[in-house]
Image (tube, rainbow, N blue to C red):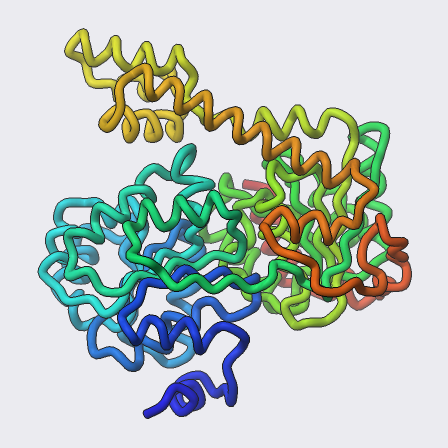
Length: 479
């Protein structure tokens, strides 16, 4: 069976999207692959289709539990029964069952934390895998240093398996991130496919304000008169709750989404948004990965993201159907300082490192730092990872270098806001690419007219039309 026949049989498509066939063919030829494909360009098909050509399991390492579950659910909806997710949601009995029959599954999704557990590593080492996939591979660089050190361990685990081809997937990656991906995944001369990061159907807008209150006022007025569906990104859970509540009071179907909510509530809110019963999500960056809603018309950033990569990831949730959509970036002086606080909040400081070493020298377990509230959990995991591998002085130097790099990325994001140069040109060049052609209604720096692109809100979008949703929302808000 050739690739087109397999595509039609299992997925119902007549042709591949740009890059998909080259990526899949390289994997079938036994080559490692790094694939940079924008949101909505069909990254998951690049490992799903080979899964139907191989008679051995495909292992997919996924960084977020919500993303993992979403991918599993999608495959099951397609009729695929031989799929499992190995993560912290499983009871010990469920985990034991899954591990015993692991070789029977076609697709195995696993969290980085579960991947490094001795029992899991031993089981994987005893199996033949057809493919190992690092989904959202930019996390190896973006999160691995600061937030998810276990993601850096993927390469170590890979070396203990039968070493099938490795596929690294991401929507955005700079040249330095690509180097990190190749290094930490121990890839062997990978074939690299980089699609343009430009999304021509997403029109880029920015608005400058004198203070934060003005931004909130603008959001409430704008959302009250324009049509969704839309996502409003903010940096804090409290701000997400406050804005969503204010929108609800304007009779707009909106809800907050962040990691502080119960999983069942997050799943319910996400499902309501996907089915169109909810027009607006006000979210931290916990929302978005793996959310396959094609008709998001607006993405609004209440404050500047900390990096251009984050910005592109988040605006990429708009216009997956190819239709005209807008991304609106709001800014006031001081946003860059808050962004710097966010990127350095979970980074271990020198005093954390010194205290960690003191615990070891006194014969105590450093985990006591967590119990005593002396260090954030993320910072502790980062510290544990690097102090296993480097001297104290080197770790201090590394943490300082990472903070400097993070602050430089905030500065690049600020330049995007302050520069009069075409916003689209700036973001494309940031990823080492060139803008192929100029377009009409490109961005705020090129004379963008938002009113020509955004539809007026209709009464059909009012929350009153959804009694069940309203009742459920009250239950969530009253918790």
